[in-house]
Length: 456
Image 1: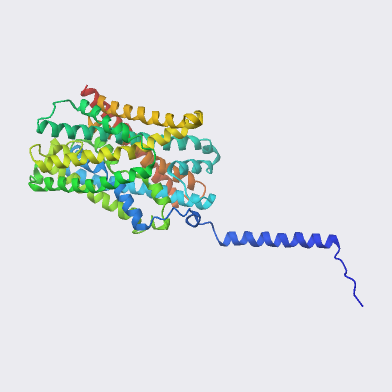
Image 2: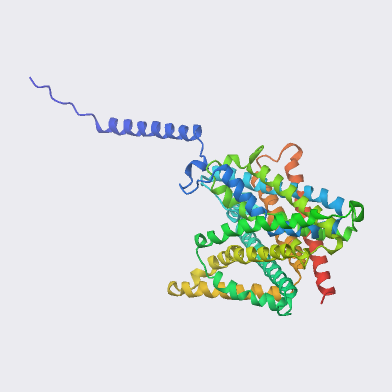
């Protein structure tokens, strides 16, 4: 005899389904609490840079043209003050990078994002900060973006002046045309205008790779001349007047600060937790940078003293082929690297204008932006062909804001109401960093403008 199937009452089934759904939600919620979001696990497959690779990229980015400016920085401070000052500036820069990266990593875990860039970190910190500062989120992003853009434009101006002065010295030595530095600045357009029309970063890789090998050879030649026949240390100033310190700080910041490339490098790492810590990628790289910059600055100033120029190669002998080779190599490196540095300001401007231009005109508009942007930079370098002024102004304005003030402010906003340490030491520490950056900016700009007026 077949037993009839008894159907379950609809009400009981509905209640049981709802109850099981609540259990499942509670279980999933507890799993999320037990398994916190790890940003590195959600990064794209392209993020495959090893810790060693990240170290190599950071060293390559930091050991740029600024290393050749360190003798000038020592000239403004003196050999003793310059040595200790380089260590101090290096420590401040490294700490600013450290707190920026740490803030970005913690923020990514909180908002469940794989990675954040520099400007994005500043914006999201303010968006998620206390209510009174949330309205400044867009301003923080814009400030970070434009500080980065102007910094790279200033670096491009420095490149143009170094290229022009280097080729002028070689031309004067070997009977070439006796043109002014301004004319040689204009002559760089022959190479720069077509080179800056390259829109894909991957096509610039061969130029960058070639530049790295040439750059290393140039540095070795410069070190050889610095150590060939140095005068006694007693012949150099141990310290200069206090009026030289702003220029020393500005030039050192321009030379040493590589915060613009830090976040892209960290975002591409397989194990971003290796970037910070002890020893960590950052600590190793910054220690090497400080040692290298301090050594070049010490040796360059010891050898050339008050004659130290904005680029060490410009102090090399005029009548020796090896020295002329170094000047030509450095000029060639900067010529090849110009397009890569120029990419940053173009990207910042293009992201803000492309939506206002019809899609069919994008190609020609971007080409026009690159064309007139190159003309503007070369024209600016031609108008003020004093290398020191560019470095001091860029270091004083942009790098004091982007490299010191913004990371300190971002950390304070992020940790506000959470953990500012015993006696709020994080707050007081960051206030000192912001104060130092403002003093460096105001004094650096004041002395730079004063120097410009005196040289008109």
